[in-house]
Image 1: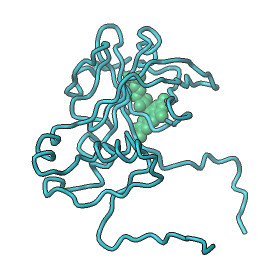
Image 2 (image 1 turned 45 degrees about the vertical axis):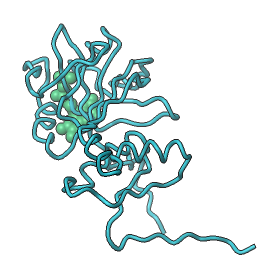
Image 3 (image 1 turned 90 degrees about the horizontal axis):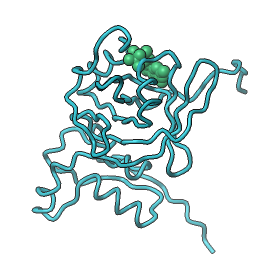
Image 4 (image 1 turned 120 degrees about the horizontal axis):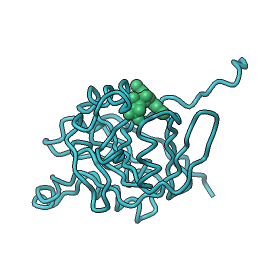
Length: 210
Ligand SMILES: Cc1cc2nc3c(=O)[nH]c(=O)nc-3n(C[C@H](O)[C@H](O)[C@H](O)COP(=O)(O)O)c2cc1C
């Protein structure tokens, strides 16, 4: 029997993202763990009202949501420990500007460039409800994959989404992919239910006899 442990927030763990916005003419970044999916075309990031980044999001109406992988963790941690109110964080990441003027982390595997469509207030927080203008994924391996008649994670995920698949297990990895789990966000950005297959992984499909 389960025990009532109070009104604990019990949705952890969540993915970590770095949210970026232009603030007073420079990029600023903060680390965010409180984020979510709304329907099929909106996402939400929950930002404490006092944060420096919020000013830029309110002024420009735009933000980037940068997926954090292991390599980015030390810098992402810094973005989450120091405020732009106190320190200029514009040089923390290698960055590039999206076509519509939003700073994106160059080394993030996947970046969503978003419009802040609404701000839903809860005590102490700006919950930014976003529409997705564009999703940028690292497709550096696409030409090589095509040469061998293979697909990238992102291409496979796009096919699964178009086919209306319920599940996708990625398999038959290129030797260039040393850690499939680290590259998985490339597929999940397009098909969130994507998983990495590995030797011995199995699933039982419960067909009913008619
Ligand atoms: C692991 C981790 C997760 C965090 N998640 C959030 C979050 O979801 N929302 C938020 O408002 N702040 C979050 N923070 C805190 C901000 O990233 C941090 O206060 C940041 O320095 C604010 O930067 P800014 O004032 O330059 O915008 C998190 C920090 C860490 C270390």
